[in-house]
Amino acid sequence: TENGGSLGYWGEYGAQPWNVTGPSDVALDGSGRIFVAEATIINARQSGLQVFTTDGVYIASWGVYGYSHDPGFFVTPFGVAFGPDRCLYVADAELNRVQVFTSDGVYVREWSTPCYGITINDAGDVYVADARGNRVRKFTSMGALLTEWGSSGSGPAEFREPHAVAVDTAGNVYVADTYNHRVQVFSGDGGYLTEWGGFGYDPGQFYRPMGVLVDGAGNVYVADTWNGRVQKFGFVPTPARTTTWGNIKARYR
Image (tube, rainbow, N blue to C red):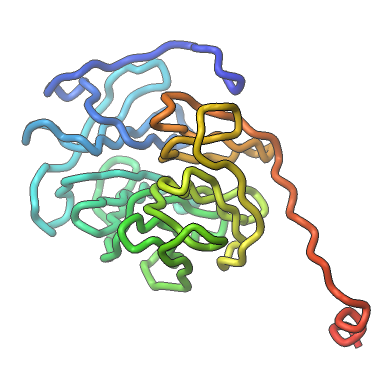
C-alpha cells in the first residue's frame, strides 16, 4: 500500500523466464501489466525485460543479452518508463542507449546517451540520469537533446553518480543523487529548487538512494537502497526566493 503495507510479492533467483534476478526498475502500462527491468542478467537465457500481471503471473519477456547494438539487445537495462505515446522506454546503462518499444515488445527507435534511470513527463519529454557524467539530460521523445545540467560535486545542481530521476505533475524533476545521499529538485529545464537528505540511518537521511517516484498527490517515495528501505515524504513546496522591490518593478514595468 502507499504507506508500506505488504500486499504480496513474487519472484526468486534463477534463470527461468519467470524468475526475477537483480530487478532495477518497474513500469506499469495502465492495463494491469507490470514491466520489470533486470539490471543483473545471470546468463544468456534471460531477456532483461519481463512482463507480469499485478498479481505476479508471468506473461512474457523480450530482449536478448549481448554486447550488440542491434535492436532488442540488452546488457544492463537499468531504467524503464512509459510515455504518453504508450511506448516503453528502456535505458541500458552498459550499452549507453535508450531503446523504445511498443508495449508488445516491437522495436520502434533508439538513441545513444549515457543513462541509468529514466522518466517521462506529460509532454513526452524524456529525462535520464547520467551517473557516470554526473548530470541529467532532457530529450524529446525522438531523442533530440533539449538541455542538460549538472557537474561533479556536492553543491546545489552538482551530483555524485545520480541513478534515478522522476517528474511530478507540475513538471518538476526529482533526482536521486546517490553518492551525495540526497534528493535534489529542479524545474523542468534544470533550475535548482531545493534538496533534502544527507548521509545517515535516521528518517529523512539516506544511504546511496537509487530510486525516486512522485505520485499524483505530490508524495515522494525514495528507494533508500543501502539502508534497505523505502521512505515516503509529503509534498515538497517550492522554496521562496528573496528579491528587491526594484527588481520587481523593473521586471513588470
